[in-house]
Length: 229
Image 1: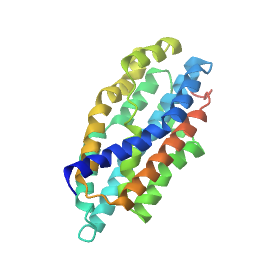
Image 2: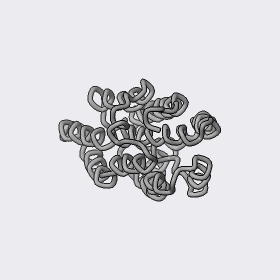
Image 3: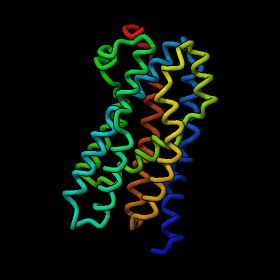
């Protein structure tokens, strides 16, 4: 596989993500227009925490599965290295998100007591099934989706101003706005380094399409949580 073919790997994955952009953008646009703004913003920050708290366990389990496949699967060693490196980059982000919610006036124990929606369980849980019972490569599609939409500072400013929440509530969201472009470049490099065949690309495409659909559904399912506010 020459460099042009390798470069096409990331192009193909990004093309899949772009197909999903209209539905995702519509879900987010509808959410940020929904009143009451303060409560709906807090609901979004809860969703952010629920997704983040699953990230490290997912990647750790994926790395363990890669270790089990090493020696029989040509992708395993490279994938394990990527997942373990990315774990180090995502450490404590869920803790920061919980601290942001505390600054919004939410009791952290109350946040943790909320049962995540079926949509969130479908977003995250499908990846556990795929990496355990099919192939840990599929988690790369999920990660690519989550890091494909870094919020610009101007959008975070708008959300802050309309919600009336203090700036400190948006620390983690701003950090991801800064870090995600770099992480997206790293995952593109991984797509182009891995010796992917057509079956691998189809697996990634399925993971991307599912992740986009489940993420949009998770946003659309958000409702105010009176016990937190």
